[in-house]
Image (tube, rainbow, N blue to C red; front, side, top):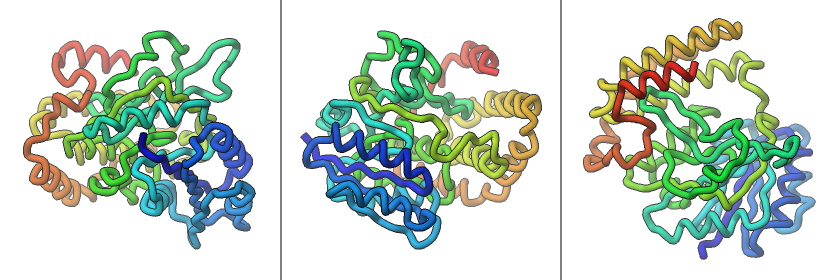
Length: 331
């Protein structure tokens, strides 16, 4: 079985970090390397908490990096062949590592998505799913599979998925670095979706392993985007970046009408929520990046001319009539 490194970027919520580290101490295999990246926390508070745990390695940033840069720094410093990027607002369950690591025996697997449940695991007698892997609709909509649904037998089936949620994704370290890591200029949001695309472009698979369970205090680390205008703009911008950077040429023009329709529906929803302005500002910011995005697209196509989008688990990339009706039903 492969050895594991766990990387936890953290910058403020030391109470959550301590709970996360306690769960790792209880449940991680003995040879697991644990790295906490202190993203310039005030008073080195993150470092102070992490150093309470014997054997935990701390990397302290002298200035605020943001999630993507902090995560990449930790992966680069890791010494094992498989790395899990773990949010500090998560807690791991018994056996979570062993079940995920088994999937890497297949050399085509570059990432594993655990079953992420909303903390504390049981809410009024029900387990509520945060993520059963990520899905991506060819219209440019990324979603968490099973999000908000009660745990049922259908979610206990392992298999290929589009992506793994950045809250707790396992990656083959050398492939993570080879395809370019998390895009650091994204800051946060959709960086895991963009990386999943590049893993598929490079010919690798992402699989869901429901026997690997992680509990997640959703939005506890960074807060809810709708309460922060800057985060809303970043989310809107990154969502657009992902679509235009990664949808292959043979799908782009077929799905563009659906993408425009999805944008209209989202704009309407943002308007009803009172968050239309940051949504539009994010989309407008994207226009200035078109030359660099087109360069990125050409690079992907040149480096991966044999890439087969049919293997990427894009949701409903065929059968567009049915796809359109399902997309409209989402709004």
